[in-house]
Amino acid sequence: MDWIDKIAFSNGHGPLAAQGQDHKFGFRRMAPKVMEHSHWHGHIEINYLFNCSAEYLINGQNVSVPQGRMLIFWASFPHQMVSTEGDGELVNIYIPLQSFLTWKLPNEFVSNLLHGGVIVSNNLHDSDVEITKTWQKDIDKNISAILYQVISEIQARVKRLAIEEYSTFNPLENGEYKANRSLVSGLSHIQTMLRFIAEHYDEKISIADVAQSTGLHQNYAMKLFNRVMHISIKQYINQLRLQHAQALLIDTDKAVLNIALEAGFGSISRFYDIFQRSFSMSPLEFRRSLGY
Image (cartoon, rainbow, N blue to C red; front, side, top):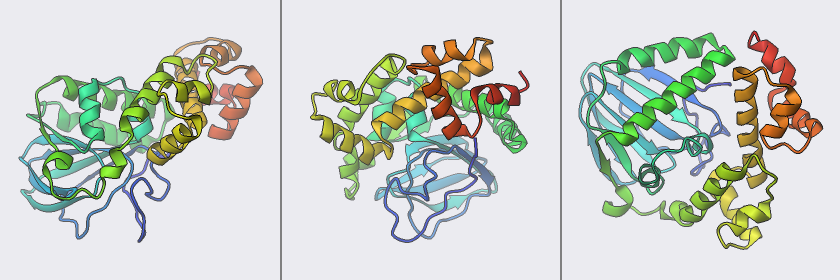
């Protein structure tokens, strides 16, 4: 649960290649400032504009965001804050794409983002300023159980946005700059694979099963998944299983063997091996680290 507080770039980096940080959540609070250049990275990005307004250039299209709004977009499209007005604060939240796609949000909402749409809330809630301050304090504590709670609350806030009234700007449909259209080609297949994995990761499934859900050749499906998600199908399945196992370790007193089987791992030894490699501790050590 190593969170980042900013996105760092080096020259020559393309979409989904931001210093290998795409798998990490991120949070920062700052005074809004104009960016000299566009940048891009693999996260779903949330911006809160508290007592300030801003104009963005996202994939070649101007997007004006009034004061007191929340916007969300897939940051793999080049984006840049080109002007700002007011003395308020900007809060950036970075959500790894693979985590975001497990949140079971409305299909239209997710599809809008993955096809270059910028979604802007029609208004904020009175609690938004205070809850983002609480998230910042909780992240600074760096306590695993609290960090998981912060993620859960961010997920709930995005779900609320997805079912409320919002405005959508669609750079890919309306803008003249189309350089990143290749990113979204094949996304319907990616969404099909992600949906299949989400429904079956706790069962015994293979890469061939995932590819078959799309009708694609297995090798092409693997390459497409890697190109868009920057993670292999096998690694992604294991990530979902690990997330499931972590939730059970935190929220239940079930035996580790039962947790391993319920999360989709074929054996206790395989579960221990993958868990240890991913978190540098055993499942029991993870549970004890949370004070349970």
